[in-house]
Image (cartoon, helix red, strand yellow):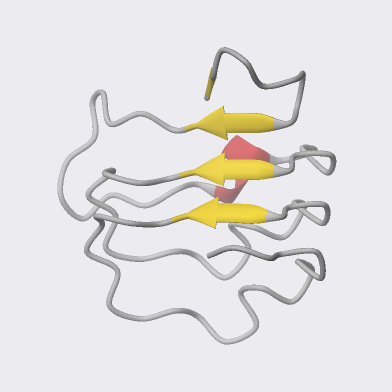
Length: 88
């Protein structure tokens, strides 16, 4: 995870594409404990899927950017804990 300048601590993060290839996904452990995260940018990561527990700990998440990926299916209940999600 790389902090974006101008975003407060644990408020906004962007996951970069370095070392990633088509068909990769986001390991849920990468986002463990980030319960205060408000904005997550996963755009342009060549993602083709999201695991069911990828967003589990992100209970404060308000904005999620998944644009420009290859995601075809969203697991049931993926957004179960994201009651504050306003922008997808």
